[in-house]
Amino acid sequence: MCILMACTSSIELSSKRKCIGGLETSCRFKMRNICWLLAGRGRKFGRISTKMLLLAVLFLIYFVYFGVKMHLYVILEDAEEETKANSVPEQWKNVSNYVTKQPKKPHRQRYSPCEVPFLDSVTYLQEPEDNVKLARFSLRYLEREQGILPSEARFGGHQKFMDREKSFRATNQTIHCGFVRGPDGFPSTGFDLDEEDKKFMNACKIVVSSCIFGSFDFLRRPTSKLISEYSKKNVCFVMFVDAQTLAKLSSEGNIPDERGNIGLWRIVVVKNLPYEDMRKTGKVPKFLSHRLFPSSRYSIWVDSKLRLNADPMLIIEYFLWRAGSEYAISNHYTRHCVWEEVLQNKRLNKYNHSVIDEQFHFYQSDGLTKYDLSDPDIHLPSFVPEGSFIVRAHTAMSNLFSCLWFNEVDRFTSRDQLSFAYTYLKLRRLNPDKPLYLNMFKDCERRGITKLFHHRAEM
Image (cartoon, rainbow, N blue to C red; front, side):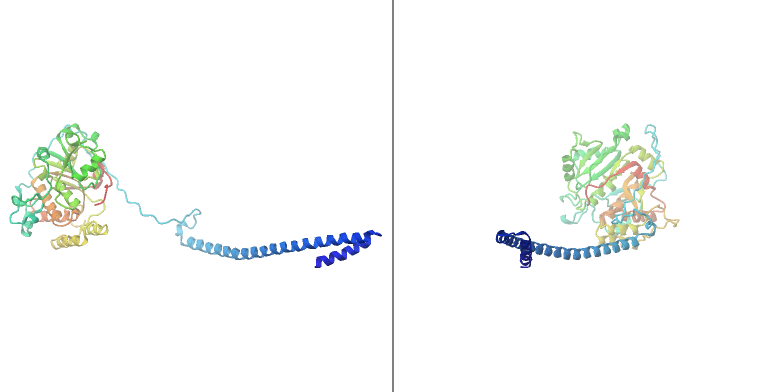
């Protein structure tokens, strides 16, 4: 309406100036039409302007709201960064490129090997004459138990407490040492071998042995180029496996040849495993090599997680002959006290805690004390062995110690590191005039002649 009135006034003024004579009426008519046209466009422009104004107001509200929020976020973020900066250790505060990271798990400490001064060759090796200082007595092993039910037959037998105490005496006697059968007609108690394998094993004089049960490990072959032709011909390399492991190895391309060998390893299949615990079953070939190889004079145990990288004859010469020992095992690389080993086994849930406690309390009641390096009568550089590599002569005292150690594993837990010191110290205490000549060597030497691998699976 305002536009129309302004237009009308303007037309009237313009008409007085421009319209002449008879043309005045036509001129006014035309000018009025123009005003109406302009008025219509003005109303349309007004509607458009109102919409634009509304959009502008909405945009302004949006900008104000989110602009304030973003400003507050920046302030809070700056405050958080300042807090982080204040929490940075003092030695990092002046470092411009310091980056906050999530804490990482500590790297597992690595332990280096050390050089083992082997002889250059096996050519001129000569076995020392019988050592007169070694204890001499006769051991026999219990073959059968009478007066038991078929369900009670056990591979380790049923050793009474008094028989156990007597067995620690280094004297002529018959002791429990695995392979105990029930009366005639009773089923086997386990660790059954093929007759051909038994014949082969009975002829072995020097043995390197290992085992894999339950497909627990991959097959690690000894490094052939580091083993002399003499050892390849005169040393038996025997790997004990169960049927499950043999099937797994075969599926991976490790198939025994016509002699039953995979590389240097003679594969011996064990049937009817004596224990459900595969670790405990593995202690049979580990400790009882003198029972499995009755004619052998020396044996080397290599855990299945290790690869042997040295000649067996050079190993025997260095760890036994040169050291004047009949039993050699390395000390543990970090732990030296049984108390520490007990805590570590519990922390890693290696075995039932109550069974560990039962074993540990029994040992304490029978004289086991904490490791004390300052004790002049300690006799050992460590109470905890590493245990994966053992070199031994099959002497009477070595065989007795091996049987006693196995009996502790059979009675209690398969964690043999818990029972090593107790067995050795009690044997020494009860036989002061007949010591076991034990060479507990540095574990870096074990790492120098073997290569460690991870297990395939955890038992």
